[in-house]
Length: 316
Length: 316
Image (cartoon, rainbow over all chains, first blue to last red; front, side, top):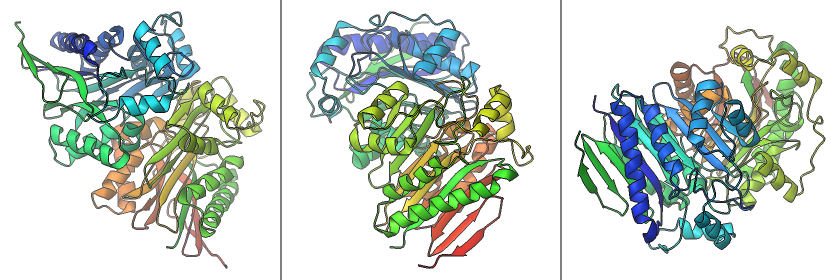
């Protein structure tokens, strides 16, 4: 079966100076995930590999480059879901590790739990041999500057997730994610984030929550989301997209319908990437921009503005 | 409009010696919630009041009487959801406070977030004037004894959440919850737990997760769940029940269908209480027992074994 790969680098008002870095980052991640799939890796292997690339890229709010909470510290959330049996692992408010998505995978593979948080998650990281980085290691000058500017959280939320008429110069909250179908037809999804600038310490957003930040079920489809976390949680955005696909909507119709519901019911904006069990691959967003890239049938596609689609044929 | 109230005290193999205490506890909580509704309180007021009664009752695994994690410490999760606008507040892995559901309500009312965890949640509790109890204050001799017995978590999960042929002598994991419809027809749900004995420190279960431990939407219905947390999270149990009601199933059919799906897809057992927007009130469980009580049309109903229903007419 032809492997399918799609990634996102966050749905928000991505400023012009980040356009090229964001596009390059999502393209590299999609290619890496697809490389894993082509070499026989599982869908889970692929989404973890793709999200690792995005976590290591300081253009995105995950791993290196994550935003700072109210106290000026980095707290990271991540999740991975295996569509075969709905297995899932996630971490929340974990600190000073480079690749939370890899820790999330170990929660799935090595524990009886789905979600570990805070000090407990860091203790588990230590048990599993993860290096604990110095507290400033993940912090970029841009994240520090943004924190100083948006220290009042209510301002940040309003500014970052307002609709397409919002101020596009603001810097932001580029949660990352990946969805894959492997050569056996298995689905998986993964999402990782530093959350939202000036969040309260201990704030957990949608990312590590099954049915909010991610969902995957071989019998339906797989989804990863980004945007205003509290809104995504309230409407169970990714589970809602899965249920709409179960009711017979296409991946694209399901994504648009659920995002529209989120906008009208709770006033939140965001974006998603989806692969249905039938192999439909799509993205959709209600923020002003979302960086995304996919690899399907030997073609790398990508974009950042509404309706935009760059296409590149990949020589094998 | 006639107010409706239903509560649960956990779905598991409740041992015989806890039968009367469990039944009395859920009856007191349902009556207290109903009293709040009759005096004009909102659905949110009622579920918080009912869950507070259950947290204060050491027969249940929430607040006083909560189980201990692997380190022998209490870590509490709780959530409340307002069906009017899907507002929600929750806490996870919070320590040494008597009523986490009241803290969850303040997360909803006083912050821009839905979920605060660990040290951040305790810092918020302090900000809000919650008393920090001594670390042993919430621990009952029974919880301590159970922890000593089930220090190996894999044993505990297998024993506590096995199907109805499981060993009924085991002590357990009685997460509590409440669902209400107030005289204006508004719905709310709340759930609170100490989690599962010998859980890893920092483990977050289904309880504080929207769509897992609880869901509420005036346009559909409200649900609170209990049982094997990881299974409930994987299938988004309470959101799944809501979506089945949206598709036209009765509250009872939706609850049974979703619990059956959880059993067949991920092998998990649990229980739920539901009030639909039409005013259907029901409970359902796939564990050997679940303590529940409801007040509807001047009648207090309650039960703990499958098919059991005690009825008492309330004189006003």
